Length: 117
Image (cartoon, rainbow, N blue to C red; front, side, top):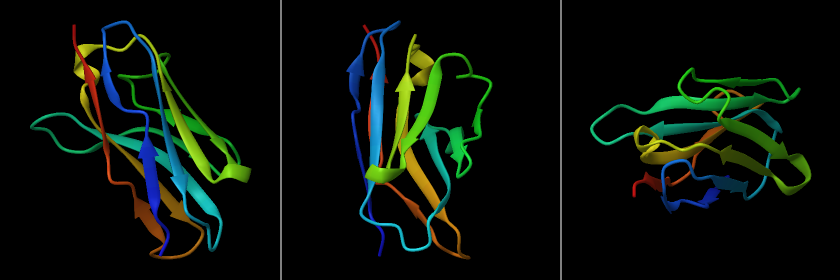
């Protein structure tokens, strides 16, 4: 069973920066998509950023230009660099990875990001 371990969350002031990391214990079929979701308080989980196996990235409109998703395939790791953070970015951030096989998708345990003075 592939496990994802996230790190890097915490408290940051508005305008600050933070980088989240997500390490996969292994890949069995190879990653097809690596992504970050967030779930703000009282709201549903939603996609923030994604990167495909070929390196194509996509972002939600709310974070475009402020967040950058990247990956290190050799380290089984996906990153989310967050800049110019705003209070509305406060949420639990989840890593998601889908491998190249039906049903082979995994979630991290979530890491809290709080943007506040």
